[in-house]
Length: 85
Image (cartoon, rainbow, N blue to C red; front, side, top):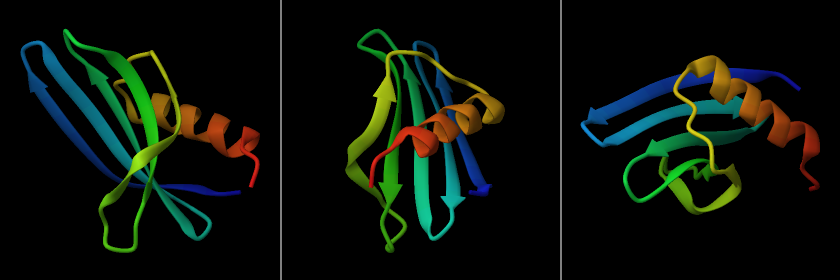
C-alpha cells in the first residue's frame, strides 16, 4: 500500500517539542504526532476525520521521540503492516 506524505508541522518551545506529519494511505488519512516535554515523550498515530481534524483516539503509539519525516514514515509503515482491520 502506498503511503503519501501530505504536510508537516513543528513546534519547538524550549522543553515542549512537537513534530507532526499528515499522511494518506489508500483512502485513509493519518496524523503522526511526536511530543517530547517534561510530562511525556511519545509518538502517536491518529486517524484524520473528513473535517480535517484528527480523531482524539490514537490507533498506535509508543514512548519514543521521532523528529524527522522519515522516522514518521517508518513508524506509520509499521502500523499499516501490523494492524488488523
